[in-house]
Length: 494
Image (tube, rainbow, N blue to C red; front, side, top):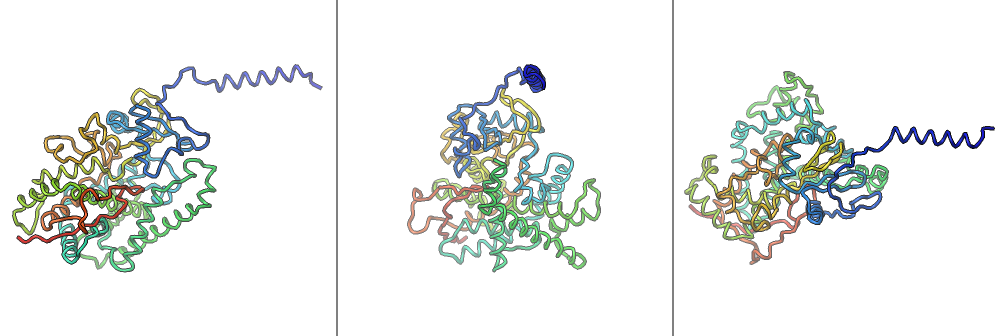
């Protein structure tokens, strides 16, 4: 039998070696300020249904431009100042160019072959180039002018036949139809098929923005299964995949007899056949790009229109000023060109102010640190998830006077823009992962709103006053109004 003293000596030796190997770093990390967290769930108990509000409240209590929280076992950096956002999306943009690898997203977003979710690298660069060149370039936006005009005419005709207009629903249908025609070559909004299509899209955004326990606390995956989340994600992903497969298959069958305007499906099939881009554009990649084009261009665009019109109805003086400008510039014209739109300085200021107060995705799409890095002097560890609270940045009282007030006039003599160069206003993000569809979305928004202000006078229904207008937000990936926007339109004769 080995003497006990030898056993103890051996154990002490092992412990000494282990300590040498796993000796903690003598350099103490300078971590961002953090709110107290609970075991297992971290700070999840402090997060409400409206994420941007919860994060803003927590950050304000910490008093720092960045804050480290723990969503379950996921360390998450919350960015709440323009300077910190600049360090993330400009100074260290390449180090924060990746997206989180979330299981639910992988199934919904075509194995991360979408531009919005693809890992940073050669495939992402080529896919983004295809999207921009063949769908989102200024040349393509101009080529889509006829489609926008035809869909605007349909909207105007519907308004003329309505007593009370559900603007929230109308904006969704309009953006849906424009994007579907540009992407797929046809609309999917009418009849029973239209109802199913809209339901599928609603559910897609619901599960995409839903709480996924497995992503935050892996051993709680059983909770997601128990509450039916996994099953719903699988069903929605399957339905979307079947729809996209059907679109591609139908186009392949009909290519020999197709004529007229080329849409995005045609372009992708042509690129696949020519195979000149250096990256394999297989069926899954085609479906991913179609999904990206459609989903990124509908709800966010409709949300901007909804909040813009809401703010105008809530502020009658701003509404009248915008209408007066539109009617002066258009001067009785029935057809409006892009040069006319470019001359609507106040209308553009209205959109900027709306995007400041109501960015469509207030916390943007999350990023991930690909290596250890410093941000605002704090140590950020590789793998840390990053949430940029664009909503909080755009309401920073250190930057904006009367930060919570709707005042479009602030942008009439202000060079700050929303296209990613000015970090005080980043509703579409910035840097490599900034939204490439800003010009497409704003062309759609500006043309519709200008026409609605030109051809109709607007007021709230049932004698409601602007103070009665419900401004509450509905939780989701995109933040829309909780209560649909209704209004009465009075046609104007010229």
